[in-house]
Image (cartoon, rainbow over all chains, first blue to last red):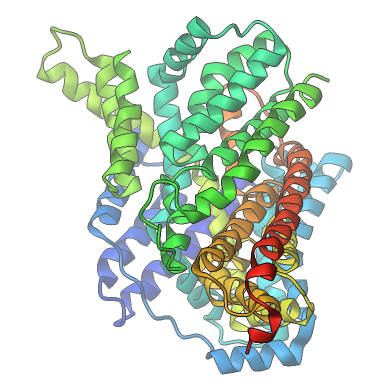
Length: 319
Length: 241
């Protein structure tokens, strides 16, 4: 049976390859620092279950320290813009097909495990989507290696090219999840929930849903990131009131709640990579303003959509 | 109440534009220490609270590895880019004869939302698509129709180009089962003893995706009407080059 642990081994190989290729790349001004960063991540994937909780904490601390002093970008070998244009014209829309392999296998694997007898023997049922996704990536890479005949190291070098441009931000979602767990253990959600419960009557479904969605949007505006707001607001209002007390379906409440948070992301300069970076790239004259042109263009969509989310959750989440 | 200090650290960190990973770690340690603090806590108590917090952060970090596992997607996406995937996307968009700003941005918005729903979130983006392609094409469409643009409208069109990218991405990506936010929800619920499958979550992102599609399509239709009203009277078409 293929399990999540096997997928982690694959992930470990990917990050270990990034580390080695980075260390060998003279063009990266901070190649050793960056290589250690990816090597630590590879260690986490390969040996995270062996080094204990404090060991993992120290590993995370090391990643943070390296990110804070700054990572570098390498120059992996790749094709020129001319070669790419030529290939795009020659190969046509067939280029989109390998990209579809990944979601197709991820979805197919999930359904096979769910609906067949032999599926769960093939893929660990508890993590079927993730394991299927990793299998999908491996199949897609294999198909492209056969079809496009790039150099053998190309998938790793191209992966490194993209990972370098993402940089330390690649770990932000995982770190925010860990922060959410610390918040949870310290009772931050309970505190926020108490403040909410004290000032807002959460005893009807409509009020609780509205408070949860508006809270998600508001907290996202403050934190600049729905990922950071989600664990706090869901522990404070979503889980105790909307789900446990009033009978909301967890999957539906959380899925729509997260999207209510995304409405907040559209309205805040704290979400720098979405709202400030484009204003700089597009040379908007008001790019330094709190409500720059991009945010002003988004607010009239974000507010009605937030209301739509409240209505959708109220209608759909209580089956 | 003291544990809310951690949230203050996050806000402060973002305001002073510190590295977000550093902010997250600082917020975690602050929260753990604040939770342990009492008026007569001595250094030993606080040190052990600090290391306990680091351990619980480490445990959660390790449990959440699957979120970062999805980055191996980039090996496949990078291979496709190498073969000209972005160029192909540009060629495909350019063949669509979009007559107006609103319609052009609408086509991009739809493509962005649809490809994000397939997990191809790196196909768009401000640096890759909006600045080099979408904004110039949108400005070009307006200039072809109304002649030289006043600054106000030019920047409005640029802002809307970025907005189409963001809104398409945000309300498309959650339909894909392996996107970070879906995995974060799964992880959070699991920590609270509720097991849900990514597919159950992503299905319930669809109603909001449709709402976003309807609302933003209407906004782009309004943008066309606004540009027509403001620009058609001010600048006759003949004055255009």
